[in-house]
Image 1 (cartoon, rainbow, N blue to C red):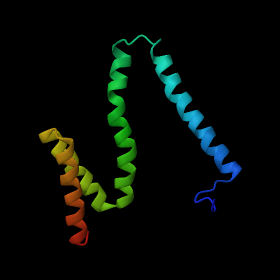
Image 2: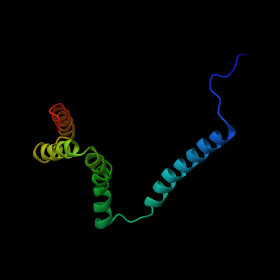
Image 3: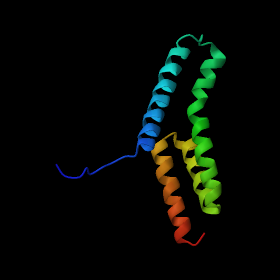
Image 4: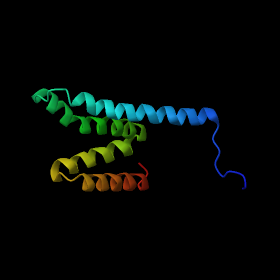
Length: 106
């Protein structure tokens, strides 16, 4: 047979396998541990708030880094979300706002 198309060094393979094991353990242990946590109101409320807080933690720094264009686009997207309660529409309007603002030189 010919040369392998894809070759990986032993260190790279060990890193990939180690991260695979760590990811699997985090996911399975999370399910295992949460099965033993009583889901009272404060814990349910905290879990319900996680998706929004994760989005804010990811999106806000990107908007600030993008400068006025990113902040304007984020503000418009938040406004659309508050009015229409439609994530896809808010995302599309935010992206359109960013594109128009950049085209206008902002």
